[in-house]
Image (cartoon, rainbow, N blue to C red):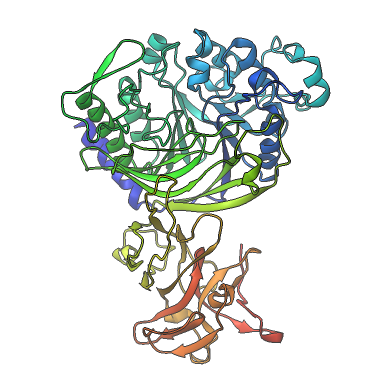
Length: 594
């Protein structure tokens, strides 16, 4: 009964339409390991120079907190771990919370068994209790005396300019018994309309055995008791299904035939571990089925991890085929990178992959809508071949943008398949009265991508819809589309988008003159005629329904079905509105915007 009640609460998350007052952001950084000799900028196996490059980006983009998904140093030791803590000060000075997670290089490196306690000591904000959430409390005995003189000259950590501690987050909890038995530091907290769950799977110095299954009840309770209609993000160091690493968050294996979920392994097979313990294929798959099932039941769309040193977004299907969740393997912020390879499970559906670049992530939470922007060094030749012995010049650019909404839908579209989909759930009356109950449809368009992973598996498009209430004057709700562009470009395949509108907000004299239709928000937040933002094509208005063969840039309205449509080749935010023509043929919506 308890699980059933929690399941009902979790399902409610999928149809809730809560809207936070203002969007907010958090950052994700991963695997800040320096594997070369100290060049005077990266002390104690900590990639401090890369860290400071990325922290400046976090500060400029006004994130509220940063999550580090583990392997903060290359060689785990108290001195090295404390060194990493000193290089979080620039975030604290900016009022940004910092929430780290152990990786195998802290938890299971060269017999270092004190990493759990050292992490909790260096970052008191992660420990439930009187200091939970209180950032900028690095203990006074963790000082720059740990850092070599040359590094203090060339790349010192930021001086403490913000003298007072500050709170980021609330409702901190931990699986106390498991943490006590393993020396782990799993914890969870809430911030605004989101719950963060950081899972430590290790018992030092055991690299391979996973202690995630022992935490499953706490995971269930943490996710199931969060407020209805709020977001949840789950973080681990190891992956659900890795590309290079086949030792995953459910345990490692010395059996090279196991892709991570036991696919293709005979039932009853015993998978040996380096520590001498064993696990059967059935036990591992049962743990995966339970975990992925809970993620789906409670509306967790992304499990975010590190460990594999490349960017990889995929959809993982549970071994029993009953559940699925996105995994986001985050890009390396290290001097080393990995190349994924076989075997891979058919239960892992690749969406996008990017190799050999330093990168980071900005996650924007806007009520039920979440956008994940991936930024990376524009010059991948900085990191290919022999990795550099000092940090090259880094120029970060946005490489991709994806997202989802708790009030939208997702469709996986294989290469060569149609994008056609309909989201008309807003007509059912389940949503708040501030919505206009707009419906949308993709009427035409085919996934023409030829992108594939480095091991030859074609990627698929994870097309997501999301909704926000209309702004003043709009004749529809606001639709967000994610996931239609290939890596490294904003341009998509050409497709036909249709949205319904409320005729009360459409002046008849404008509907017949091409001055009413689909609009899209530009980079300055202004609503413009949607086809004016295409890559190529020419605007052409048609009064009536869309017909096959209309070229890129054609747009129109169908008064019979009360829908507006347009042939476009980008995704983003769309609505229906009247607009007016300005001088020199430039079109802009005349309505207010955020």
